[in-house]
Amino acid sequence: MAAIGLSLQSQRVTTGPNTGPAELGARGHATMMPSMDGEVDHVKNGFNPSALLTDFDAGKISTLPNGQILHEYTFVVKNQMIEVMPGLEFAAWTYNGRIPGPTIRVNEGDRVRVELLNASDHAHSIHFHGVHPGNMDGVFDARSGVVAPSGKYVYEFDAEPFGLHLYHCHTAPLAKHIAKGLYGAFIVDPKGGRPKVDRELIMVMSGFDVDFDGKNDFYQVNGIPFHYDHKKNPIKLKVGELVRVYLVNTLEYDPVNSFHLHANFFQYYPTGTSLTPSEFTDTVALMQGQRGILEFSYRYPGLYMFHAHKTEFAELGWTGVFEVEA
Image (cartoon, rainbow, N blue to C red; front, top):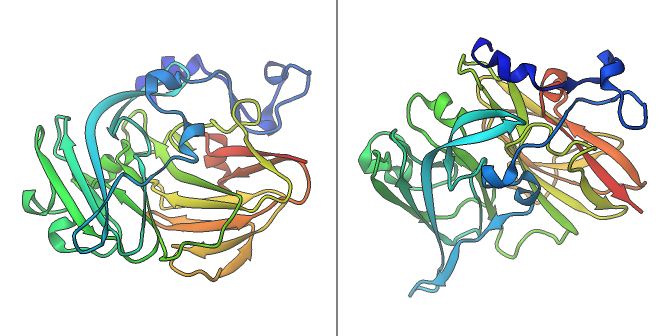
């Protein structure tokens, strides 16, 4: 952390157990959960995690001569400075200027066509989780979708199986390419869709290694640590609403991440490839690349935390609050 020490000293991270006079809030109460003073400049960053929660992208839709639905996307990868904490910028790599990249959403059996334009100074690719031909896998060389600077490639395949998947750059060094921001969610809905719910949210878990020592310094959902703090941007729900969360773990440098919901339990569908939940719980652990769908509703109004249950991650940014109204 030495390279950014001066920048970090200007920040104030407040944590419950060690709060002192400097951490007293406006009402004179100690802060009882991890937090961070100030906000990043979302306009300058080009994305806002609050908007990303419900930003499901079906692309440009048309119908092929055989009747198949076609979804077309253009992804531009570029070098980009992102303010990840107030006053602290990170030299990121992004798909379409945001972290995570666009949340692709299609139906099972639809045709997906993604044109990747490389506007950066490194070779990059897109590796989609799912079933597709080897030359669409984005791994080995230009013939399989690794794109040199100023180059382009078109990935095209049928969306299968239904479930919650992800995509990410698969160019070496792989961990670095993912950790710098090249990842996103890929939702394939079953034919006929999933049962209707009142609200759907996407949450992509990741970390930032801001001093490039191969260790994460911050952890977050949808790109910015502490964004869904109860004093900043809590996620508003209503009592009785059925909520579905698409949860994806893209964290590098740490082997396991987790999600814990306060004062409630959820139905859990690992990888979303079944319409029958496998577990009724309040905590799940996910290794790198694992994902799952959570469904729950709140019985009582109030403020309820959600966070990684590895407390180190929570105290470094992976935490948020549902504000449930009557």
